[in-house]
Amino acid sequence: MATWDWQVFCKDTIDGKIVPGCFGGSGDTTYLDWLLSAWGWTLSVSLLALLVALALGALMGILRTTPHRGLVLLGNAWTELFRNIPLLVQIFLWYHVVPALIPPLRGVPSFILVVLGLGLFTSARISEQVRAGIQSLAGGQRMAGLAMGFTLPQTYRYVLLPMAFRIIIPPLTSESMNIIKNSSVAFAVSISELTLFALQAQEETSRGIEVYLAVTGLYFISAFAINRAMLFVENRMRVPGMIGGGT
Amino acid sequence: MLTLDFAFLTPAVISGYIVKGFIFSLQLTLIAMLGGIILGTLLALMRLSSKPWLILPAAGYVNTMRSVPLVMVILWFFLLIPLVIGRPLGAEVSAIITFTLFEAAYYSEIMRAGIQSISRGQVAAGYALGMSYRQTMGLIVLPQAFRNMLPVLLTQTIILFQDTSLVYAIGAYDLLKGFEIAGKNFNRPVETYLVAAVLYFVISFSLSMLVKKLQQRIAIIR
Image (tube, rainbow over all chains, first blue to last red):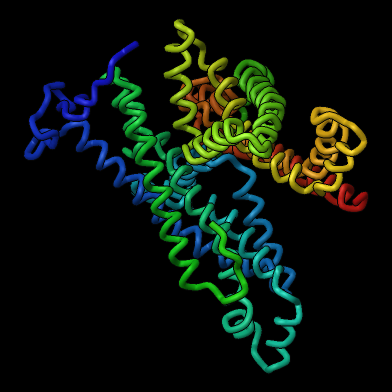
């Protein structure tokens, strides 16, 4: 059985010599430096994609519950389109196909394309949650809002959405954790995030187990941090008597 | 502006590049589904038992699998299986083992919910009739749990089919890989990725429509 060698993270990425203190500092890069910057990329991709997904997912989910046929159709089509193509294929579409078909997008960095790809993929799933949340409210609430003389947007803004968004915090939590996990496909288009680090560092150092353990641990920590943050939001936003605890 | 040209996708090219990958993707999906459901049911039964030495390992396994990205799980197994069995293993076989074990965690959560949806009185009734644990589960609880959860199990299988594309990470020859290689060889990557996306969409979308139909029929029976 092979022995552990955690010193691998202190090695310089170019000459493989162990750097004292493990951080490269000026000029040199150790595997630890690389690991941390990869973590940064994973978090940036995930959080930006989450913003895109929440905005578009909420919009599309709301459209699907409006009384307008056309808007419902648009929301449904959006959701089915982005839900039924594998994420990796969608990322390839953004990276290889979209810039080829739309020339102005040719100079866009792949980081942005991956954020859009992951964001739109997740927006379909969030739109499902938002739709379910709104539809779980008693139908009388919408009618009451309209009967009070609210316009449809006002009914959504003041009556339906404040309740619906609170109800769907638990599923949104798990979608937010999924986005961290799903950001791992960005390796396929050479974003220097954790999975790509794992692949390349494993190849260069032949210390696969140590490298994978570190990467897996960071994924754990990231998802757990999101879980705690969302729990905090859930507790702050809770309407007494509406959500029973939940994790 | 680039003009699209799909003329290179002749039947010969399709059977040369795509079919092989498609068959592997289907194989992977079916084996992982069957193996995953069997293992998942066992894991669910373990978690619902009253013995801590059964509950803890099952819960630990399921939670670990569910909190690691699938790509990392694929890489882990590709690294570890050869160390365990002492010889290198092809990417395809490794993928089949990985997906079966990985999906078992997700199927087990579904089966757990399904088993819990059966009222406890039925279990008590089984025992009162003198049935053993095995008989109560096998003849009363599991058949009902299975039927109630069939739509969810199938939806998970559609997700599984989409996720098979992630074997890209270890270079196994699946549907997506077939399109990618064809695209490289004919220098038409844009067209091949488009066709791949359409194909995945058509398969997943029509399957999910079928599941919706099935769900309505099951809902009527209940």
